[in-house]
Length: 148
Image 1 (cartoon, rainbow, N blue to C red):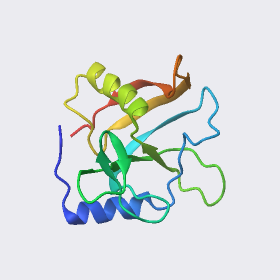
Image 2 (tube, rainbow, N blue to C red):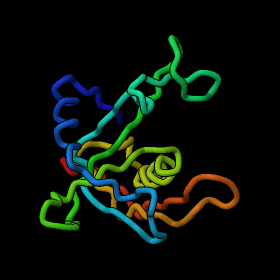
Image 3 (cartoon, rainbow, N blue to C red):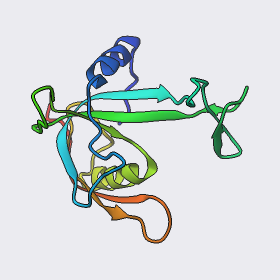
Image 4 (cartoon, helix red, strand yellow):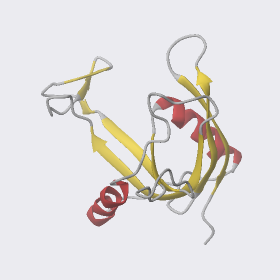
């Protein structure tokens, strides 16, 4: 299931995403996991370190005058986790191809038509580095669609 986001939906997603912490950063440890309700979706055109927008050219992201924009997508989850007094429990899960693979499998197992606001990711787990090659392996215990 896909929903078209209105301009207001996108503004609200940006607001909800502020202060959201990344549960799967660079120094991630095997066994790290996150669970929570999807409260927003954020999609942004990726920029380089100089602030220039990136486009796909020959399957590589680069500064260019033409090509498909490189879009980063995040799910903002509301969790019960609190790392400190300033932590609101929001987690920003970036949908790179490795995370997408795990979430896609969980959505198919749930026989859902796709992700939805109000759905719950239960136990998105970092299993470890991909063998062989680059990347990471994730697993999603379950996706629970929202109840109407």
